[in-house]
Length: 87
Image (cartoon, rainbow, N blue to C red; front, side):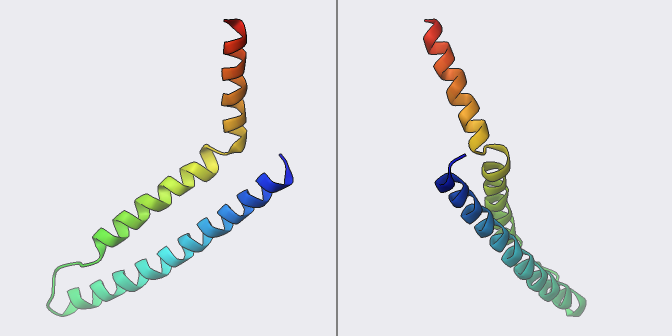
């Protein structure tokens, strides 16, 4: 792994962890606010759609960072190059 790829990966990981932190903070605030409203009179929970969309985006980023990382990409490239050599 060369330096530029490693530097970009660290930058992406840092961004992902920041997004997770902000998601947690916002989820706690929205959930707490919803719980307080539920305790009084309002029985609707607003903000769940926002949290759901944000969670889906975080899951996609996690898959991209941890499952489809550069080693996986390199392995697929090598497999494709080997199959083209056979033909």
